[in-house]
Length: 310
Length: 310
Image 1 (cartoon, helix red, strand yellow):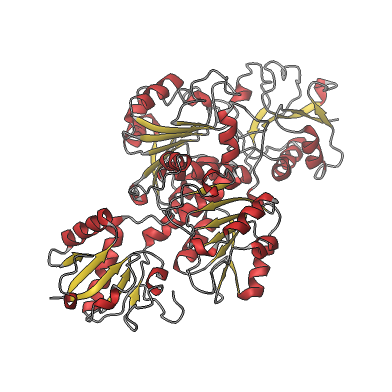
Image 2: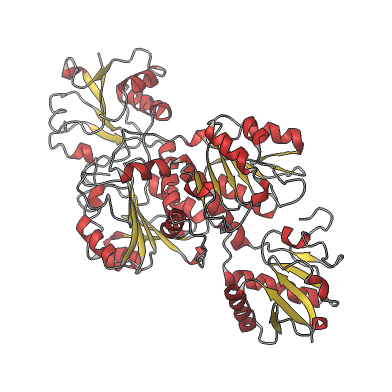
């Protein structure tokens, strides 16, 4: 007797059960906290389950994150040691994320802050345009999401580089890697897009030192995690003119607290974590495939290294 | 001594002349209306030259439209006939046009107006997923610019089809022609992107009949010419929900009058005729290229068909 545990505050259990049942007709689907016998659960499909909850599921063999990130799983110090950890690699999620990134890159590149202000003031005014091939976009993180975004930004004619832990070979995307090359990467960047996973190493990566390594007047686009940015440092750098503007989809605390200075800041565009959501329709076949593999004693795809945490 | 005349609004004309003379100090360029002896003029570079002025130059060999469109030249009834007219066909301009369409399709698809309103109120909405599959772009006009835009949108993962006067054969982009072809395309188009040339045949093409052929809740984007959109039909279609939103770069009257209802209509995104931003150093090189070609009797780039009017 094997069962699948489900938990998420944001995703509909009914949609997921229906989606998975198409592929696994006899699915035993249990929604937290009504989990029945915890020893029957071998597969967990979760987002932000309260830490400590998995400990009792001693036969758990695989934990699948409902989103691209797995930091919410590693927040739990008591994950059963035998459980493998995987994440969804939903091709539509990469497409949705790239669209959100492209929208914000183009909005900054085409002087959207200025033109949208003209529109509100009913002012018909054209600014000298910047040249796209001279605009240097940098993508932090070249995983599934980052590499898709980097390729698509490059297809629009921008000069694109990426930074990742290890060197990457992506056509027309200059590869920087490792801690040693971060500064050189930032030194050549006008528009920075952060699509990193959150790990102890990347937490606070955009701080009062690194933000000043960017080209003066650079823009920041963050769809990684809120904790990648030191908020006080970003606000200071915008105030000093070092950073010209930011589009942020993720925050230290979500929903973003009402008193947070980002909300009213004219140079900060707050998005309510809508860059890319996994969707039961397009991701169900991938999760069903993973469940079948795990129940048959095989390894699923897209496993996470428990040491690197990504 | 052959001489060039230029008319383009003072500031812009001066910048063009400076750049042209920097690249070729031997050029003699006069700024309209200081034309000197009209017999000296062999090339006229124009943007909305007052009617009748071109007829004053008996030795004219070429008319250069300083934009992608040439309708402003054809509208002059006294224009000397039989003199080659060229328009700007510049890859920088085409890329800029592509960026404008991509940015505005994404602004509409990703509901930026809705999110801006939420931000004003500091409201964090429930989770929303956006489905790329729901976007189907139909391009009106598959000339130099339209083809470039279609290919750019396809490269970033959007579904694209196109319509033009004569059927085109483009890789991976279904193309339609004729009135029946237009109706066929509209049935499956929810983002209608117009970059047609301004001719008798395309005047008022964005009208109630066309809007009603599209699925309910579609979007309209226009960067062709203002006269191609029937403004009252758009407002009515927005009111009855047939059209959900629009992005407009061109208008019947430009600059758009301050009391025009479009300015304050939240359903309409507008920009001041800058979709195809002209990066001066690049476009000046294409002007010089045609000047040398004209004087050496070589084939011109971007030559316009007198009968078709584009």
